[in-house]
Length: 338
Image (cartoon, rainbow, N blue to C red):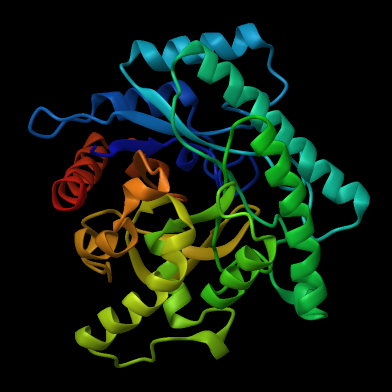
C-alpha cells in the first residue's frame, strides 16, 4: 500500500498574529483552497493535517460545527490525517513538565483533540493519522536545572496522555524540535520515548528540518553527530545512525527542507527553519533523506506523509507555485519509497 500525500494547515497560523511586526494568519478556507489547487502531472494532494486551535478551529466547537468543517474539507476531495493538539500555554494546555494544574491542562488538550478526532472519524473525512503533541515547555533552561527530573515529569504526563489516546483508539506522536525541553536532541528525545515505554500508543513524529538540527547538536552540542566541514559520506553515515535509533518509534513523518539555520516568529521560539522545497540553500536531498525514515513504514502503520512549511512568509504561502513545487517533491518521495 502506498502512503497518501498531505499538506499542513498550521503554516497559516504558527508565528502569525496581529501584533506589530507580525503577519496576519491565513484562514483555514484559504489554506484549503491553495492545497486543493495544487497539481503536478495530474496528481493532487490527498489530504491535510490539521491544527486544532483558533482562528482555524475552536477546540470547543460543537459537533455540528466540526461536521461542517469536515464537509468543507471533503468537498475539496481532501481527507484529514494527523491532528495537532492545542497543548501549549495560551491555547488549552500548559507545560507537560509543570505542576499538576499545568499538566491537567495538557491532558485536557489531548482529551479535546481526541474528541475532535472522533467527530472527524465518524464523519468519514478521517480514517488514518495520529495526534501530535510536544512537551509544551519552551526552551531548555528550566529543564537543565534538573534534567532527569524534568524528563521524568514529561514522561509521566505523556503516559497519562497516551492512556487517554488509547481509550479513544488514537495514537500520539511527539514531534522532536530543538525548542521543546526534553525533546531538543536526538538523545534526549530517545530517552523520553524509552521512559514513556508505550511504543504502540506514543511514538515519534520525524520532521526532516528539525531532525537535521539534531545532527548538528543545536541546544545539545554534546550529542552533535556532525561537525562543520563534514563530507557527504560522513553525513549519510551519521544520518543512518540517527534514523536507526529513532525510526522504530516513528509513527508520523514530515517532509521538509532546511538550510541549517534556526528561525523564530511571533511567540514561537527558535527552531528548525523550514525552507521552500527548491531553496538553493537547502541542505537536504529530500527524496534520499526521506527514505531513511520511511523504511518499513507499513509495519508502523504510517498511511500518509505531510509537508511542513512552518513559518513561511505569507507571500510564499499565497504563491500557487509554492504548492506545486512542494507537491512535486512529495510525489518524488512517494515514487521512490512507497
